[in-house]
Image (cartoon, rainbow, N blue to C red; front, side, top):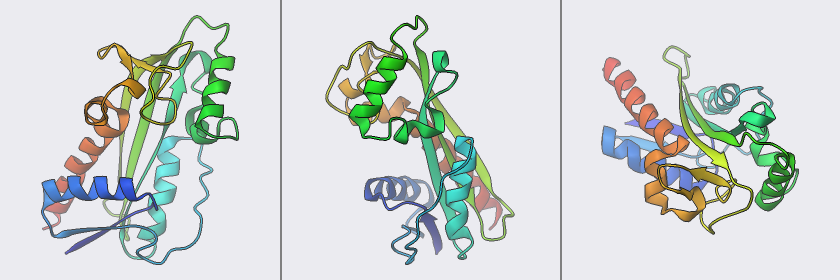
Length: 200
């Protein structure tokens, strides 16, 4: 039985990862949360990159003897030199609406509105022998006003050309096929499957 801890308390993330890992690795995988292992502290995310933050979070359960997994993601806008980047969730100091308002304000006089969503996923082992990080990216542009009611974060402003819509206007399943997170998870599961197979 393989015990893996996702360094999160987000039940949706945990269920999503559990389903994917079961599909690839079978029911011998148990995916736990920080709450499941009794970890009550907060993890400080002070890295300068998505990779650093993901590794920091995944290292917490690894130090307790588990295979630790964590992700870090955000929006990088070309005209803002990659901002809001690792500060995406706390860009304005407020909620998603405030973050979107600030982004629109920062881009008011910018012609280049190219942007990308980035997601990194880190896997850290207790002995650090097989640690790895994968990265998923999805490219689009930032609109001048919100479109759509779905999604979260910057989705109402993130226009994805192949769909001709924002991420807030498409079904979740369709978005997951092409999103930064969807890409990262597929790479992650493939890599973890290979690492565990090599260990047999």
